[in-house]
Image 1 (tube, rainbow, N blue to C red):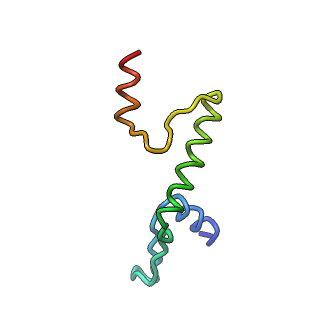
Image 2: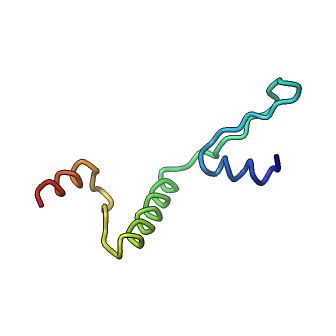
Length: 75
């Protein structure tokens, strides 16, 4: 397999063990993210969802899925 394909899988969160003669010799895993990196990724995901949802916000920072579910039940 090509290194670029392995890196793509790691970017999606997978950890890859590379072996030689059935013996593990290396592990490639996602880099650790800072809390700021995670918030940036969540905000980007929220924007993609909003775009697919016709511009309607789904959740705002600080909201919880539980409050979102409860709000849906009130309607």
